Image 1 (tube, rainbow, N blue to C red):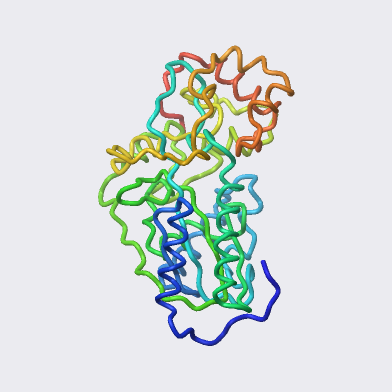
Image 2 (image 1 turned 180 degrees about the vertical axis):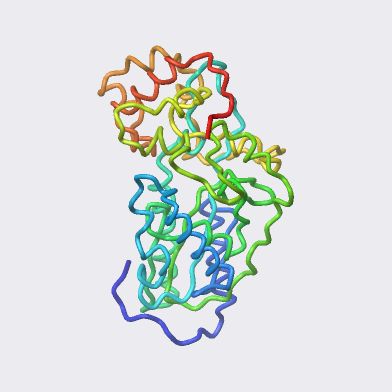
Amino acid sequence: MTEAAPVTAELDDAPGLAASLKQRARALGFDPVGVAAVPGSARLRLRSAALERWLAHSYQADMAWMADPRRRQVEALLPGVRSLLAVGLNYFVAVERRNGAPKVARYGWGRDYHRVIDGRLRQLGRWLESQVPGCRWRACVDSAPLMDKAWAEEAGLGWIGKHGNLIHRQRGSWLLLGHLLTTVPLPADPPAQPLCGSCSLCLAACPTEAIREPFVVDSRRCIAFHTIESREPALPASISRHLQGWVAGCDICQDVCPWNRGPLESSTDPAMAPRSWMLDLPPLEALHWDDATWDLRLRASALRRIKPWMWRRNLRALHRHAGGTGSKPTP
């Protein structure tokens, strides 16, 4: 991010600049792309209020960073911000796991998406600065305190589904999100309209009933939270007996979504290509990895957030409860 003075004047050809910026984003592998204006529409304010209610119920569990006030104040991330470019990176790859292999969420199959998206957004930021000298910008991936799905919805990329993930008409919910905040005023795209209708398949499919109501996910019940974020020495029985093979994240609510039933375009981006061992790894072999093997196998992976001892913790829980029924938990 540069330190020059912010751009406040309207541009002579803001629509042309926005079109060129989107074209360059698509050339870098992003699709869909869209622009939102700051401070956003009334819907964004409703999303902010929903976040407040979610935090008030302690649904964030141990993820204290979700309460960072900057998440509801985009201006705090880049003073003088006027607009943002929202981008999606398709991470659906049309391959299947071997039956019995430990399940890893699709977003973790390839290279660390934080690095991939951040690097490409920085290319866009430098290009924008070359077109508008003196502008400022900031690249944000989901590690930044930004309501990324809400802003992506505002920019027209898709709507937030009842499982809490962004859904695109053609891509489904297999999208990794990034945002380029800028002081350059760009024309906004229309916000996306929700299309979940009366469907509630994701709520019914969650084996731990983590989706407490449409659009509200309780992290304390979520398999993804417990296998990736929780630093407890053992998984609670209410989670471990319902893992259904998952050891790193969980895609159950996405797998049942009608918008993900295809046919979907399989990503050809080399950064999204799965590591072969993730699709056919024998569970007992994975359980006996030492730290050096874990380091080698998960090099440049988003799954490095799961430490070696957590990896073994999750696999032990899976091994103990292999053959579980996956029935609904007792509230």
